[in-house]
Image (cartoon, rainbow, N blue to C red; front, side, top):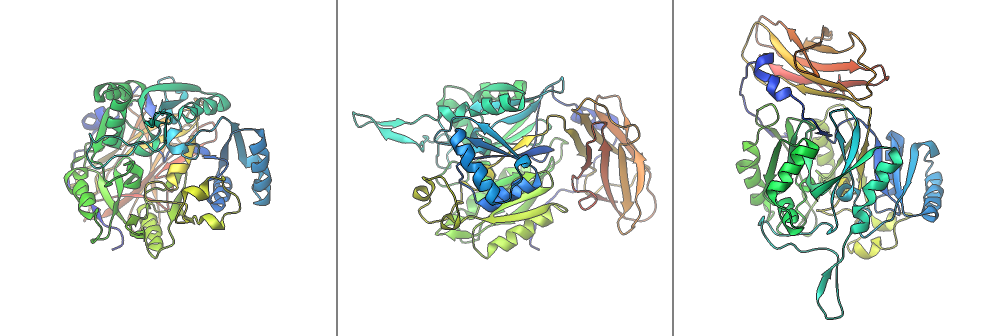
Length: 493
């Protein structure tokens, strides 16, 4: 098996009374990566392969951050050479600092308020992305420093990049939400339902700027709706410890976690985190996460190919490739984990690129554009749809005891505020192997945004496949899984 998983056969009763508490949405809701997006944000001049730029523009809007009109003109010229349609590009002019390419880290998070309006949350980023060892309390070492006239080392601030999200918010016409704590994008995953996951370096970064773990947690809950925050151990011997180079949150219930070769120095570190930390975490529905594994390998000395550092954007997954045999295995494992998604790989050889920022070659000593702590996910970011049609499914556990009926609970929020089309919210289900689908209406329950449906099943053991579909008057149509019916939920009786 290329793809292995750890799952738990824990049957749970399915009644609205038993699960309503877990469906209550926080007043503010921070969006997950897999939610509907208008497009992707990148920075120009580039530090990504041009083929990735072309593909992002094919699939959705390409939001391009440029420092001035001169660079905008240069970008337009190259985009035209690459046959990128002008109407697929949105340029945002904003000053660029030391960290301009890492839009993942300094970039904004989408947050939906109780009124349904989207704002862009901006964490503190004046000190860029410091590194440390595996100890959560180890002294931080900053990337950008210089010697002052007395010979003392001085940290170069990244305040220019810190304020860039405000330009994005102004450009798309939404409110900017300034966060009083560090919230570096590459080290934060959320499920869109009030759970967040980071490595423990993020707590150390907040202490460095004078904050505390308690103030960060209270701020994350109040401003972002994060009610369950998990911190796992740092996983690099020395690095920035960003969680997106170790694992990927695929949805509310699944984690895709890197697995090193058996003889790699970090193999025990990775497996200890999986066996002693991740298996003990509970998802928003009170069940252990399903843990899938993504096998990596060396691409340069002991450097590991960061295949988890991939971007999920609508029904596409963009994966960094490292020019090694393991690339094809990683693409296959991604496809197994995400049925129906278009999984696309991108190699980045600096000398083969027609246009890059002048400083890139100086920073890429071995000639390869991706590295183990900084790849494709780090340099891209979603621009979420402020009028999205949001779906979240409390799927039935993989194995359940037989019962007279099975209840499906779904969160549906129409952020366009135009309303859900009557009778358009449906549960589609069938026994595995049956080519025909049965459909059952999802009806509103007692809890706001919660819709439910019951189906009755009898007879011998069977596997049930299902997906959810809905449609709003804004013209938006959504399913969960988002690639249904190519991607489906299943449970076994």
